[in-house]
Length: 465
Image (cartoon, rainbow, N blue to C red; front, side, top):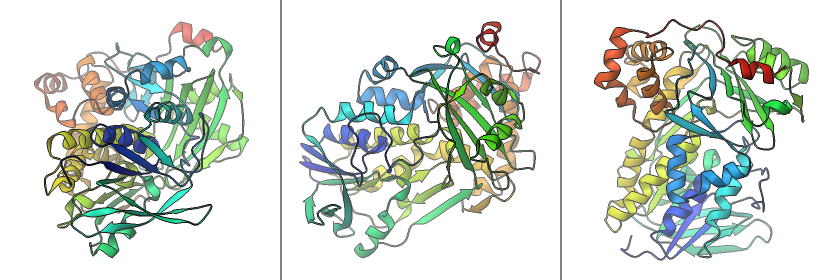
């Protein structure tokens, strides 16, 4: 890659692709984004983001990166009705270990419908006239060798016209449907290793109108499965979003999938570990049908381990590592990868091993969310594991003993809770749980007794009446 590249190509116009385009534009003269969809001129659903109907969490670790790339994004989202939810202050959360006490905020999340989030980011990126989108276009091939790409070949889906685009850097942010493994094969590159942890989890989601008094401010409510119970995991989430609505997403692992009919959806919600989600739904007005979704396995492709790789080809987001969405780490992990790419372009562009350096650094950046998700999912009955990661086999139970101690003590101890929140929101590394303050709190044990009931305030209970 030359020291002053002129044109960058991004494959995929979703959130990861648009953030990538913004980062690339800091270092190249022009950026072209390729997407198979016609990107909507507003916050609308589209085929290329099949899970957009379900709940999405932008944790503070990811939100801060988005804000660094596109200053003012959080305020734009809030002005459009998104909610800023403090962790743990604005959460009513039953974790696998019990009810979490609502300590003062140390981290946060942005609760918003995925179409509004994507549109808000996309609209800002495309104010730069040097960033253009080729919609209704698919990539046919990579042009170049196993050492360097000259560009890509694309085809217009409507006219069938085939075009060659020159590019100094190509980034695949094409999501779970990425065909990068097929594209690199003609270059003589070997098949990369892949780790898969598939609990068979499926989703059912319905939008509700929140009770009028609860629409402006109500906590996020979640009841998570206990992965240690030896039974399929049922979970439920009520996420306040714009326009006085709640996204209600129910999930179940293999053998206990949530139904998509109205009666079954309600019964599933009432049958979680605690009936709170079902009780709250009884106060809200359904606004549409129940929508289901599959294809939610944890999957990680190790392009970083190949001994040969083009020096100007990068892959990130779900095209590289996709996570069980129940943990909400996908968007923030993609943002972390974009931040890595941005730093590497400042520090390492023009070096012969640029892309492999970036891929190794991205692999490090996404390792925490990968192990957080995969090391819980492996415990569910029927989970299919095809992975060489030793942390998911011989090291698993040692790691889980520590995780269980953190999870249990953190319910009632503010020090451990704050450290755990930093890890969950991808604002701090997993290694921060080994700090002296946290280890001391873990030895001492919970600071307060465990809660036996949901930590709703009196005002919140009144809002639902």
